[in-house]
Image (cartoon, rainbow, N blue to C red):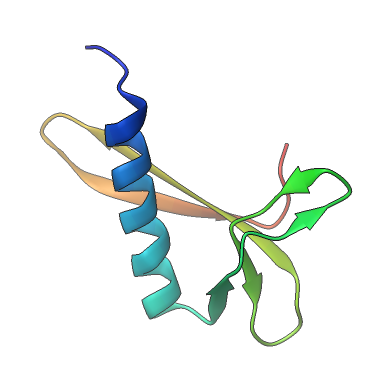
Length: 69
């Protein structure tokens, strides 16, 4: 399977949009101390990173990370 950044970016944006529609986060792509985050918690301003993954024959999944590692 080849890696196509355009396809990865497309599905990544879909996951981020779905997460923002179903959870109290704002997609603002915040940068904190040179770390880039996808969203900010609407309630307390914590940064969040939203990650999606997909494999053939398996439904898409995503995870929220409170910090990057």
